[in-house]
Image 1 (tube, rainbow, N blue to C red):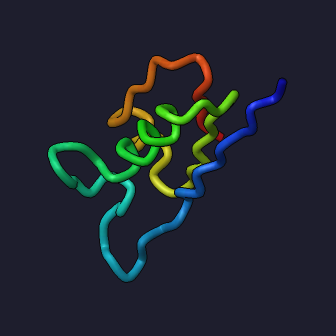
Image 2: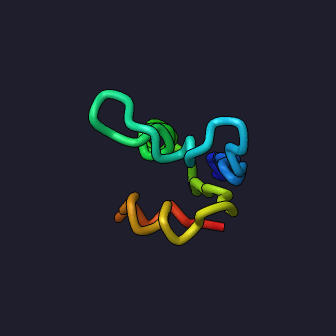
Length: 72
């Protein structure tokens, strides 16, 4: 049985914020990492995070070992 897929949209430039919102810290962890971990806690078959702006910095800052996860 297919359990569904989560798609996290996190490709914005944060031009008004002036820094990557994806990496802002909340409770000792970046906001994007918290969203990814929450999605992985649900029984999705795959969790995909769509990133664009500062993609290398984001991928280097957030490490996810779960095989259901991938960056796009």
